[in-house]
Image 1 (spheres, rainbow, N blue to C red):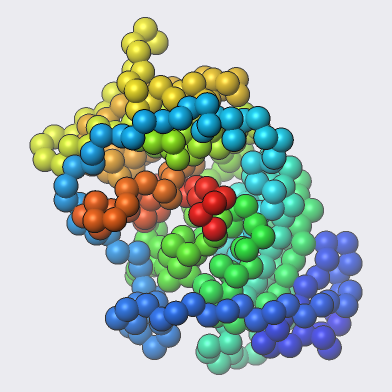
Image 2 (image 1 turned 90 degrees about the vertical axis):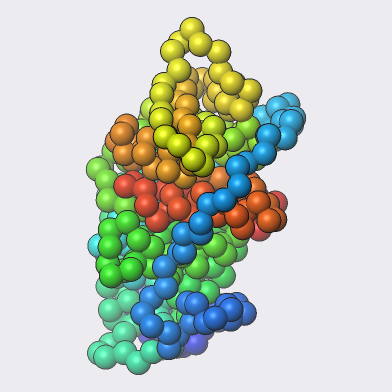
Length: 352
């Protein structure tokens, strides 16, 4: 293997069909500004996890949805679900699961697949760090090939969370494992994954272990907004190309008292917050199971995901803004931390 052109600051790229070929330098990923209080910075106490903010005031009435616009942009434009999928790997079992699931989605949607390993320049390394990185890339690439993908692998150097976000600039989806998380807990999210969830310019898949036929059951949360119709449309497109069952869940926000969930019967009408998403899915030939709940939205999403044993929970990144968001916290962050399955956080392209 030719390592002469690898630079610890610039990294290098290797094509899918030419292992050991000359690789072109990659620009060093830009570091983002430090966060208040030092969260996520090197030298802190362990790896940071995503905070769960306290929930406060109820959500107001949903804004009117321009259904023709929401459906039209997603359904009439001839664009792939994801044009490019990026997988970040560090050689761990969780990262390899992200590679397998990312490859599965790339194959199903016809997307290009890139796998990247970031050599952390912020800490000392024992042994041959580049050889270890290449071995991690090779394992992830083999998993991707077993799923039918033909990935390109890339080795870069820098601060892992910022480098992954920089590498995702041209991607439609970035896939990561939850990394170590708080005390290695299965339902926690570590520093790298947390930063990617917050800062990536594209949709993010947080991969948790599942079977070879992932995804089989998809659950998507909707709130009646135009953005949630777009999120449901993406979930329906994934269900269409993978053959997965799709459930659409609307939660009536109630922050005191009991919580409950129920499935709408076929003869029951969909409420206005749910109906646009059901229609969007139906326009793709996907008949969605309609779910309703009362309670805290993030709790209901996790509860229904566990009850129905779904393997992919889809939530939108857009939603409540300003003071209301501060009071309510982030539903997507809560789901990423606590869901028992993989979580896809959908960002609209205009957000990048």
